[in-house]
Length: 389
Image 1: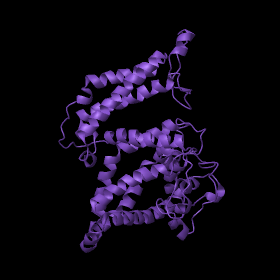
Image 2: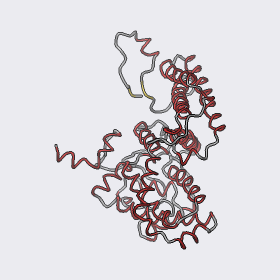
Image 3: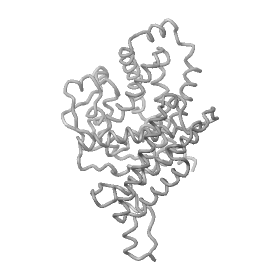
Image 4: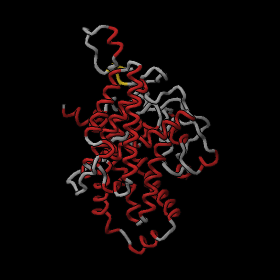
């Protein structure tokens, strides 16, 4: 664990040991109260954010997503978070893990003061701007909860903790990427309508949208993957595009959270490019929604710290082993495995690299875009900044 800020030296040493002023890192030993203390803090924070979402849905939720919410289920989830926060907090206090537990319980008290799970739903009148706080909460609880469980059940590297090195940096990427999803959707849709609306052919879009949903899903995956392959190779060609993509490749440990380390410009460029064929071909909204759910899970899965291999299926689909080799810091693996859905695309274009086993090392030798969110955001522009200085 690393110190966030030092304890005052005037405090008695027993009191310094009693209070935790550190961020969690590494493995927790069950039964000593630290895990409960930090889970209390996490659930308290999520409870407070959830109450804010109920109070200000027009500002803190994504309109395209909230239309499908079951409000009763959302309230039950919020109540569950608050109960979990209180339970873990009491256990942590009983084990004298005061500070994180008290912080979590303080946020729990604020959540209750602002209405708790019974908070009346605020105005849904369109706001001039909004952020996806709802998507962050749901994503962290569902994606994080699912993949942390999978990584503990079948870990590729059992010694790698959930709170491994630089987990906080990747959590910042996760947080901001989810908050900005609504902005990405609005900007991407505007760019596609402005730039490609003239190229849509009504007879083609009508034919495509009439296909069975399962066939549309496969067609979306293939169309998107061909575009993704091309833009992915462009990122690896060097220059400004590589400096954007290098942020993603800078992770030296692979797990579910590493998939979120993505420069904001790469997210915008890639989303716009890969949504172009979906827009042009006019797929039915049900197929698009199904694909959005699939890509969210699959993109996280192929980065995960899981040891599963899939035999002959690896010759068809991109799996964790395929994508781990793409991130490998091995000379023979550089500029390979660009596909994101179908591994046979790499075989067709001669960029498939799938030896037996798994990589030993990840990241970029001799290059690192920085160890802070700000540093990684500025990294593509570093030559211009250095020249200006």
